[in-house]
Length: 507
Image (cartoon, rainbow, N blue to C red; front, side, top):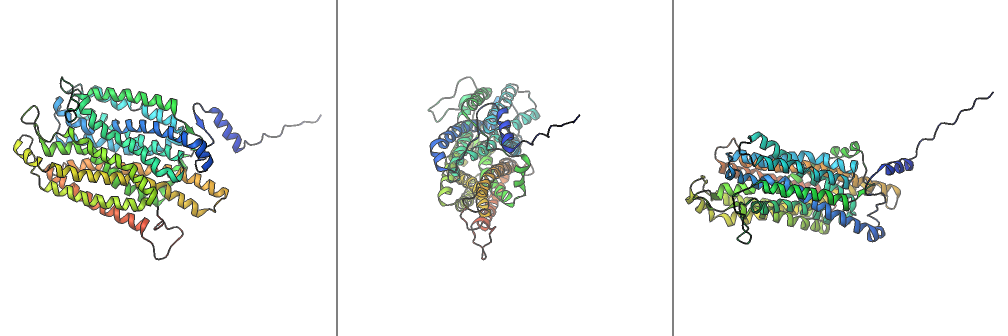
């Protein structure tokens, strides 16, 4: 009798593994995605990318709104029965920015892991945590401060949305259009900061809009804003489910993605992004309190005297959001590094101008209408220069995000020959690495949103005005350093050109 054995099964091929993974998927997945091919982009890619960009903007917009809900609501806490010092209010403003910055990296890693559409659904649904917690706490004046800190920290979930949204959209667009697409996506999100600061006072009954829209009667009800944004979070979740797509080509292992932390370019760009986006989100969060503490006093009640913060607080974020696409467009046209250098130059000049207006102010006691009236005459200068700072941060935000994919694309092109399979594979890998870098850079950059409000509060400085002036001096010096780094690394032409050098290549 002869014994026979079957041959061992063949190892599954890469194609078989991909087919098996595809079979296990549920929902809207696209496995054939070639945005760099003109014919594919014109016939199929552009329409799909625009649809995903539209709903990505909607979800990210809500994330920013929830992230910055404390920036304006903190200024109303005293009027609804809470007794907190200016330092405590700045802490509530700063905490969401700290948590949001820490969440940006894991949110970026989630896009290749779960799919852009799927993660947009999850991240939008998570906004129910800070909104519902906010609605409960503000209706109970006995809520301890530490509970408010926890709820404010949970608002950082909205800050993580930015990184996953930007990483997702980066996969959809060809290199030549990434600057504009990422600029639009970011601007739509950034507008959430401005609109929450504009409409929250109206929704809660705290203020109207320059007499055009009147505040509701019956006092301030902060919980109303939370209910509105909880409902919008549900709408964003459903919209992502119905209209967005996952890209099967946007796959990468976390270990592969995290290799970008070993690249010096990641940390250089993160440093620059602290200066642009960190300034935008930090100033946006602090501006309502800066206006209230320096230009308005509550006496004589009920309207007080001076400049009412609710009428002007939204303008900074609005200007910064509107100029972000301009920064992306200018970067596509003239090079991201040149535009970034110009943005930092503007930030230096106009931050010094803001500092000059602050030197003209008298420290504003909370019950001295005479001082408020005197400071009020300087407010147009303060606001005008501050809006110029915001405009520069928006342009810098758009240009730096254009630089990120360009850096990795140039490095891939230098390492491969044109028209070869190696070039195609290198460009795909570069896109994945750039998306991972966006998460790291966005996380580090957003830390500026925490540091700026903390610098303004400066509990170690007795005089709040002195703390504010000192903070602007530090910020100006930092922008000078950022401008110098931009020029030295990306614009200065070295005496001996090296293959690995990125200076002077017009990134």
